[in-house]
Length: 365
Ligand SMILES: Cc1ncc(COP(=O)(O)O)c(C=O)c1O
Image (cartoon, rainbow, N blue to C red):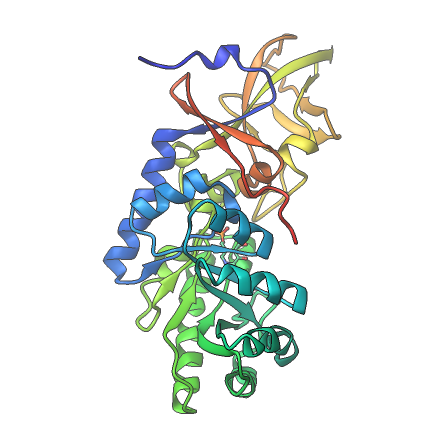
């Protein structure tokens, strides 16, 4: 029996096409299997144990997250192997991590001796060990040590009681700014190669490593194939979005998450307004080049401007919008959209099948 029609939903609502979601999950799992690497998807995209369970069932080894609060939500939901792919700092966080390690295999990122030291004493005093993974910057210019400094930082941290160096990781976020598919592919190869070279230098220096971990959705397919890479952490691929389409990572049919919105005002022939603004769609720009606030499916008209609860459509000359009409919007960045909502509506075609709780939304501490 199909569930109730999406017509009955109150808007704005975030819809997730379950068939597309499951296809995205199994395709990435298959890619990782073919490449011979572990898949550790970044669950910041959905923050939902239910979707995490689908990823585990398809073969993911564990999940990646960023914050301790997210890890607490996932461990409470039964997940037992998590990596915080983020430079976690501070004794308060260390105490919470220590309690998580009673119930789950945990690892956290670091890119400084100070950061690692802020976690070490809590574990050493408890007679326990926390796995840590060194973040390496392969060109994004956000966090991470440059490859040239990796041995020095890793060696200092490997000597700290209470910590164990599990591996190194990177995230080629600059792939989102590459203007061409060739550009994305060049970044993907370098992501893998630079990280593997860094791993070799560390091993030559007597620092054994288990994991060499890469990952972003645009670069995953190629970076995971570089020999020496052991793990991949894409996140956005479960949903995809308008930016992934623009980057050539996927096609429109591979996008699982859309926003169902209602036209609430048509104040002029060239302007219509929907009930989804920045509090529903986020203000994140389209990548790699800015261009509107989301794509209205099946229409040429563009979502030109957002305020908090208004999405202003610049109506194309040959199109008409009516008050009360519903539209589907493909967001620029699906990960931030999920975090803005308590729940996502799982649909099959035009039927509601399930409600997916975004259990770790807002867990930024
Ligand atoms: C450290 C880290 N790893 C993996 C990912 C996943 O990347 P994507 O969302 O492109 O799949 C991110 C995304 O922000 C990240 O910051």
